[in-house]
Length: 250
Image 1: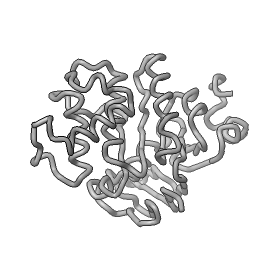
Image 2 (image 1 turned 30 degrees about the horizontal axis):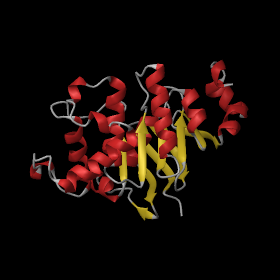
Image 3 (image 1 turned 90 degrees about the vertical axis):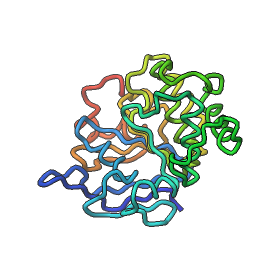
Image 4 (image 1 turned 120 degrees about the vertical axis):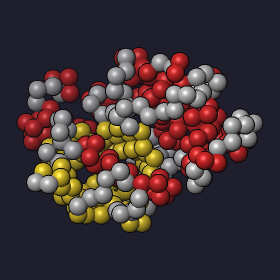
C-alpha cells in the first residue's frame, strides 16, 4: 500500500487553477521530489497535503485512509509532519524545549499543558533522540536565537521527526543555506530515506537529483512528468518547460 495517494487533486482560487488534476503516489520509505518553476503550485500542493488548504476536488489518502477534509491538527496526529519554506521555530526557547513541544503536540496534548521541567523523561528522551537523529544533540541547551540558519532548519526537521510521522513534507529545507550547510542537510535526508516517506519541494537541483527516488514536475499546477531522476533529465517536455535553461541539471 502507498503511504500517500493523491487522486485528481484540484485547487481553485477564483478563476485561477493552482493545482490542476494532480495524481501523486509516494511509496513507503520513498523520497519523492516535486519540482517546477516559480508559480507551479508546489507549496500549494504541500498546503493541501498538510491540511492548511482544502482542495476543490480530488482525494488525499494516507495509508489508505481518506484525509482529504481532515483538519490540519488531526492530520498531524494521523502522521503527516511538515517543515516550512520559512523556518518556523520558537525563538524564545532553547533547542531541546522546541523539540519537547513537538513531542507533546505529537501525543495529542496542546501547549497549554506544557510543563517546563526538562527532567520530564516522557518528553525529554524522544526529543533528545530526534535531535541526535539530525546531529543537534550537542546543541540541546543552546537558545534558538543563537543558532545559525542551517541549524535552525535542522531543528525544524527534528521537530517534524519528533511527531513520529508516516509522511514528511519538506518545503525547501535548503533555502538560504550556504553550500556546506546544504551538504549537511543532503546527508541528513540521505539517512532518513528508507525510514520515512518524504515529499521534498526544493529549488537546489543538485540536491534533488542526488536524493530523489522519483521526481514529479509541475507547470502551472499540472503534472507534466513523473519518473526517476534520469527519466526527468532525459524528458524533452521537461527540458522545454523547465530544465532547458539550467545547464547544471543536464
